Length: 122
Image 1: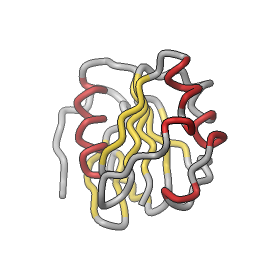
Image 2: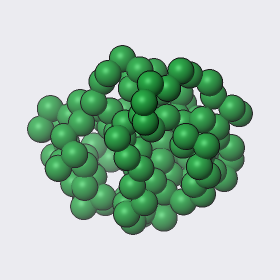
Image 3: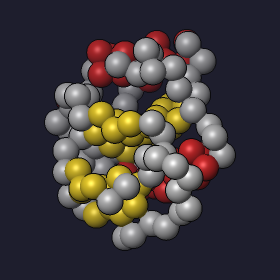
């Protein structure tokens, strides 16, 4: 599905998604990525949802988002809260949703100038 939203400047936005990929500002990604308004990172080494551990969530502490959107693939899944307790203890909200919903929600929050990070899994 293609997503359309006015993009002021170089803000990173999801422009499309499918079952095996997402597109950010027209660039295709087919492995796990982290998207912020100012950049896309491909160094979040998580192959799939079942591999998630506390270190993977610890990655986001240094980014200091208001909210982390975890796109869990084709269906919504929930990691155990102990895996991301360091984030919630730091006041960072963690929202889990399927990847298409995470893409849409991210675009809305970025448009509102919220400090949001989307972590996308397939």
